[in-house]
Image (tube, rainbow, N blue to C red; front, side, top):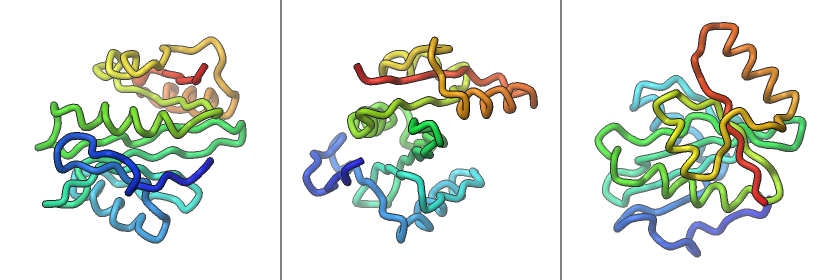
Length: 155
């Protein structure tokens, strides 16, 4: 997948800027997740996307974890609590999804976020799902997670 030059991308909203984070800066993203109460550690093989605010640093993040099938597993889409409801997650996802071609992306959505993902073009319980992603999803479901399998394939 080609690298996205963050300086060539327009602001998401006002002073918010989209950025693809280099692995050398993943610790900063990990710190953002921890500050929001999440125990997340970005791995070197992942693609990590953020929305940054010039006043306070990262305000949103998402991780794309490559799978053996060639698809991506979207994990940990998160907007800082005090920045929610401003369209930041939508802006981040629109930029991120534009970077996926020709790969598909799957996520395990919380039930209250199902409509959010559908509005972005994801399908609930897609008819085609790679075995590696389906296996992980079924493992989480067996552990009692009520997540919904969602898939995004660019046409």
